[in-house]
Length: 493
Image 1 (cartoon, one colour):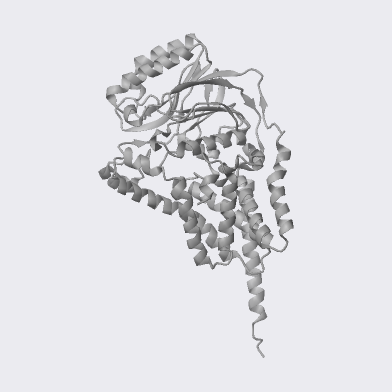
Image 2: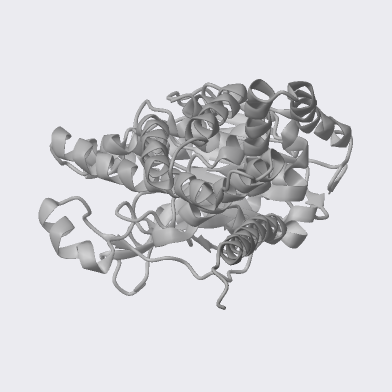
């Protein structure tokens, strides 16, 4: 239960390392089968607390009974818990009594890293609460532009293993020294500038409307919402070079409000302002009432292009075909969304290219990497109102901080229900708005050129290292077993 406290809003990365250390200690004497269930229990604690907010959207906006929402969430948590269980099982299956402690630590770290990666890609993936995201408050984060999120996970687990051996082994001073060096040494990288910032900033205004999910989709108040946005934009237009609205800020396709958007576009062009906003886009443009949409970032004024969300949330934004009949009867999902193409032209503001992520995509650094190094800053649109007053918004924002460090780019976060922010390349907040309040965020960003080692190489080096460690231990175990069997063979006379 300690590990979730390593993430926002608690920001106790030491609790995460301690939690991993206790888990590593617990499974040391266990047989593989027992280790699996210990890992399952560990995962239930991690995800049962860390992603409990899933039940909020299922109950309040999926209109399912509370008990059924809890049941669905419990099944989801159980599925996620299988990954730390798999890590524990494989660790004990590969370990031998003679395996050196350092190799054990490297093996466990490699298995943790690879099972986290597997969780991110299996069945469309769910990389939420990846350990590396929770380590941006430690000196390890200086390594983030080099080794990526999974590299940080690997080092955090390795530090936890060193801590375990420091407590349990007779050579505890040596292990303690390794633990301290691992956590402190990355400080030496703190002065490195991974990108070159332009000297002239772009001025930014973000409209945080804090509109409830029920009002947002209520036709009776739609034009009141549009008037609210228009009033907020009028305060910024001509004063700020870029104006942002949140994900699906305009909840109806453009065909329904074409005159409104045309007038806004003309004003923005005359004042040399770029307006970026979230809106659903019908796939068949000749039928505005189509039930199939893209979740998009669209543009007005001196901005051009459109970004269509690539990584959709299963059961939230689209229905897997084999679940469609059941979920339609339960009224959990009312319409489907379509994923955008993986190779989209970058959206531009004032003819400057930037990277775009929409909501859940913040958990997938690879989607951002595809848009770099051409992109000069990052725009993230979200609406965490689906998850109420929960941990989700804070966890989401922490991932945004990590991506700015990872890519050495400024980032503008526009979130409907709070925590809209401007984040600098060091992952620090230039400005931010409180959660669950309406307001206008103002600040500056500096376009950047260049790329970090992670942008160039991605996760391949750290995943390859983990694979080599695991393969090496596996081959060594096979060789030792073969030697052991030959030693006890009865010679034929």
